[in-house]
Length: 326
Image (cartoon, rainbow, N blue to C red; front, top):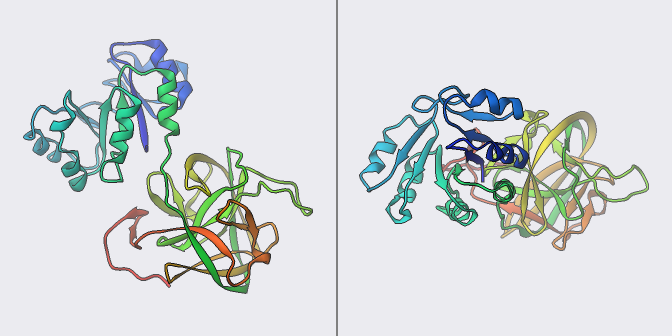
């Protein structure tokens, strides 16, 4: 779930506090309450006196028939649209999602949010939860995208020269079997294991993934990818487990240093995918059972986990186009 907004209309201070404590992205308010919420903590407000103003920065459309679809499609595509209805069978969400983004669905339960997230696989861009409980808001923020990881067989390992590589230090400790998806192509990304393993060289740093060179792609929340060189402190990152479960994390620090590199090629479904990593014992990929495998221990036939999809990205968003990355 990309964005979780909480509706505190009519005004309920305890709901606003719950939204803050659960990590909601915004709170929808009556006019005149934004300053009061800002005194409780840092959070975006949606109100006439808020950060996002209804009718200008964000729109709300009550759907009562299929004719309302055209009203939604006529609104500015770069502005969030909150869709609300009492009858889910009326909402042509599949049609809307195929034609525009920035769709938010007003919901009243965690189950409705899961349904909204699964429509067209990509789901809506966010939900606005009405009459929330703190536990539900927290659960919505933790709802994870499930990725189908596949096994790949190592086909080539080649030492390279020096290059600029990036370590991602997050604000979250990872455990065995967790890491991040990194690749030379968005079509195939290997699960690079976190530095959560005891070793004789350095202390474990379970908050870190030694991700790869500046040019590489990384999977981030919302089905997007970014270049490693683009990441900054405070940016969102995506932790991925060997079972394909994901969890959002916050980038705490990026470390860019010159290090010796190694080229890795893996084959999945008869197609080769590549990744460049730092050439060091502490850098690991992830085996199918979740065990970390050091790059210095890789050999032809070693089995590792990765995520594959059809290539094609524009500013990190999936697009349908013919592309071949080598």
